[in-house]
Image (cartoon, rainbow, N blue to C red; front, side, top):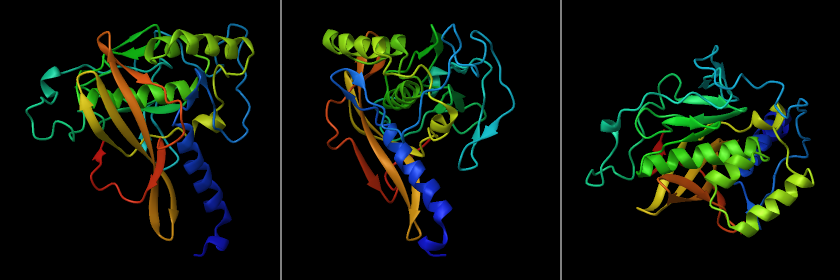
Amino acid sequence: MSEKESPERDRVSFGVIASAAVVTLIIIVGVVVYLGRGDTPAAVKPDGTSPTSSEAGATGFAAPEVDLFGRRVDVPNNAAGQPLPQDPSKQRKSSDQDWLTAAPAGTVDPHGWQRVFGASVPFSTSDGPARLEDGLAVGYSHTPQGAALAAAQITYRLNARPADRELYVRQVRVSAQQVTAYDQALADQRLPKQQPEKVTRYLVASDGFQVENYADDMAIVRLAVRGPVVNSRQLWSAVRLIMIWDAGDWRLKPSTSKASQTDTVDSLAGWTRW
């Protein structure tokens, strides 16, 4: 079938690849810049919560659903997610041959991908997140796998809820100047409390990750998000994120430039599948 014969497929494909760019979470002078498609913020209740949010503090899961690609995604009763029991013995050691390339345990099992505030994020049984604190997923292992999990969790959550100040100041490595700019954006009501479903539905699970560089204090992680099929070839949007080990956990370091942060790849050879 030619491209002219499948306008709906092309429209959806464009939406998916464009939404992958949303995941870059470009932060310029401290303000989240939403790279959406002209969507408006979701309505919120008088108390500031999303009308579709599950009860905070709830545990367990509702019936699982599927994402745009027909993949399972579990729905926690707590909109912030449901951390899984951790087995640190499953963590890789720096002496292991697959130290940089192994996948965290549990992500391919039920509850390994959860819909958190509308976005699909990974939960492992080896490398975190270990718990929730004030609605934030925290407790990632000091490993490449922990860095990759934190990169996906923090980036997707902040794209789904750009006005989540607690997330921004606690899990993004920002300066006082950046916080001031962010607070001004909040005061100007330029950041939505919760993105609507027509935006978050495109925040789908990444197909794989790469740890380009790893040290005790920093990790450079790439996430590959599925995009369109062009000339019978599957494409992915590859997003590069910098993670900093700070105060016993991984935090996202915002990029101040669009350069080299996102590119397109046509193969996941050399990538780690979740």
